[in-house]
Each structure stands twice: as structure tokens, then as C-alpha cells.
Image 1 (cartoon, rainbow over the protein chains, first blue to last red):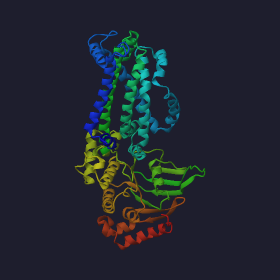
Image 2 (image 1 turned 90 degrees about the vertical axis):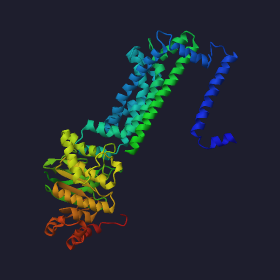
Image 3 (image 1 turned 90 degrees about the horizontal axis):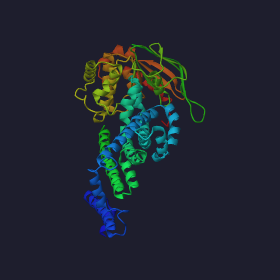
Image 4 (image 1 turned 30 degrees about the vertical axis):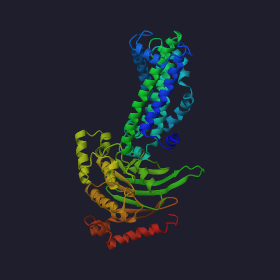
Length: 266
Length: 264
């Protein structure tokens, strides 16, 4: 009976917190017990405590040439470049497509076809064309991050009242000003939502992008650890990817809520 | 200052069925410099289309629209538009909204502030400059929109049912203020409305359109009566009680009445 009442109504925040913790304890506890039982060898499944211990150790002892922190910084740099490039091209292009029918008709078919190629599927091409230094990995991240930037800016621009654009035109505003002062602020809530999705996809594409990197990065750590048969390090890499991804999402969620509440008022 | 000339203007829109929809047929109309012309007509008489062509937001299918002797091809700050739904930028303050057109023109910051202050005072809106449009009443929002149009010192003012979204009292106050403003700082005005008394009260001439397709029905001269009886210095309720006013209003109303169908 007690369980039914919890399921039937929206849980209280404190209950929600408790449930989340219970889920985590169940998952990691089960994993820990499984690892400790000896049923699976540590070479196949290291315990969660061992994984965290490995991550801690990697923070001070270099693996694959760098400490974990240095690998994370390298990954974040690539992420920022790929995501930044996607936003810098996708948002203005999306706004312009929302405004100019001709551009929309030219770009849309190509875009619609290309966006079904998964970021990972760009890896061989990116390596061939842009190399394994900065260009290739950034290109792969870009491929993951670009579509939501463009789509949300486009949809946002389409939803801006035509009357506002016309008012700006009759007041003497040129194309650039209409874009920057009417379409961009008008589409901002939609754009910020798009950026959040885009950042998530960019971060998810990161490991794929780093398969072709030969120097540093979390993905590089994981590939190296795999060939060294060190599952604890592979999992420490996955743990880092998960935690940082979550942190990025939480930060952007907060930014999104801020913009929405301010724009909702305005 | 500039005049507006419509010469044999026809405007039709393509439709899905293939036969184009004719919004305006063969309309010729001239609005002199500093003249206030109100256009009334039933829905479907193309009055808004007429205004949009003068603004450069729509283009005639046949004939020509000229402002100050020059063919209208695109929107421009010499022809300011006041829209029925105000069309204020919701993310800009009152000050930023009024200054928008001035920034487009490249007016220096100090001069912008002067002009904004001038129109805030003229529209009795001092103290609201840092508010956002959603924090203002409908009447206040429309004042900001009018101030924004006036601020760029346009030759021509195009108003598309600007008081249509306001309640009756606010509407009356705004009509009075518009008279005050346009007599103080005259512009060439094309004023679209469906309210007959508003048209007669505000305009020098009232243009009555017929519909299906939209075409010119008749033009009624108001100005001689207005000047003879000095409407401008009387309060609006007094003017609307004058025999001369009701006579003109009835005249316009009769021209419209036989076009109104039960489905309107």
C-alpha cells in the first residue's frame, strides 16, 4: 500500500531525493557485491570502489602521457571548439534561414540528408580530411553539435512575430540589425534550449572524436587502457565522461531556466 | 514633408484555386503634404492592403504608389507605421523601443536621449522609460508605439487601426491626444480604421471604400467644417455632439451601411 501511494502522486522533492539515492545505492552496491563475490574476475569487472580509486590515482600519476586532469582539460578544449564552432555557424545560419525563404530552400535539403549521418560515422572522413590533430576530432564534435543549433535557431526565428520584423524594417533597420536585435532575442528561448541539447550531443560525440586522437583526452585514455587490458582505467574514463557531461547539462539547464523566466516576463 | 499618391492601383494575391484574389481594384488617391486622411471600409475592402503598399510592405500588382514623387519599393524610415497590435519589441524597454529607429539612423546618443525625453513628455509618459512593454497598459503601449514612429521624424505616418485593440475610454483619450499631436507636429497621415466617428473626428478627409473587390466609393471633406467650428480646441465629447459632426458621421455611415451584410 505504501508503495502504491508513492507511485500514484507526484513525489515530494525529499522523497525524490531519497529514491534517487536508493537507486544509486542499489546499483553501485550490487556492482560492489558482484565484484567482491569473486564470481567475476577483477580483470573483467573491477569494483566501483576500485574504479574510483583508479580515477583518484590517475589524478596524480600520469597515464598515456598525462594525468587525468590534463586529459580532461584536453577533452574540454576540443569540446569547446567543436561546440563553439557549431553554435557560431548554426545559430546565425538558422536565423537567416528562418528569415530568408530562398536560403531555407537551398540549405534545408542538404541539411536534412546530412543530419542522419551519426557523429561517429564522420570519424573516418574527418580523419582523412582534417587529420588527427585538432581538425578531425573537432569536426566530429561539430557534426554532433551542429543540428540542434541550426534547427532551434530556425524554429525560433520562424516563431518571431512577422509584425516585429516589419516594424523594425519600417523604422529603418537593415538586415544585420533585424537579425541581431529582433530575430536573435525573439528566438533566444528556443536557441538556448537547442544549445543545451547540442552541448550534450557534442560531449557524447567526444569519445568517438578522440578515437582518432594520438595525444591526449579522455577518449584517448580509454582506448589506451583498452589495449593495456586495464578495465579499471577504461571505467574511470567512462565515469569522468558521465560526471562532466552531467555537470555541463546542469549548468546549461540553469541558464535555460534563467533565460526562459526573464523572457517569459518580457 | 511628402505627399502620397496611389495611381490606378490594383493588388491581387495568388490563391490555391488559381484565380487570384483581388484585394484592391483601380484605386487612385492623393494625400497632400500634412494632410490627415482616414480610410474607412467594411472588412474585405482592402484598407490595410492600401496602407501596407504605402509602407512598402506589399507591392501593387498594377499601377503605382508614390511618396514624395518617388515610387515605393521597400519599407523605409520616411514612412513610419503604427500597427494595431503595437508591435513593440518585448525585450526592449520603453526608452530602447523609442530610440530604436534613431539608432538605425545613426543619431548620436545624447541627441537620442533628448528626443526620447521630448516624446515621453509629449505623450505624458515620463517615468516609464525603464519599463518593459508588458508592464504597461494597452493605451500606454500604443503611446510608446506612436512615440517610436514620431521620433524618427518621418514625412509620412501610416496608422493601421492603431486604437482598434483599446477599450472605449482609452480610445477616446488617445484620439484626443492624436489630434493634439498631429496639430502640434503635423505629418502626412494615412489612418486606417473601421470606426466612423473616429475617422470623422480625426481626419481632414474621409475616404470610404467599397468591398469585393476593394475600391474607392467616395471621399468626404471634413476640414472646412472642422475649421469653421473650431473642433480642435473643443473636447472630443463636445465635438461629437455637434450637429455638424453627426451630420458628417451619418453621411459616411450611409455610404457604409448598404455594404454591410448580416455575416459581418
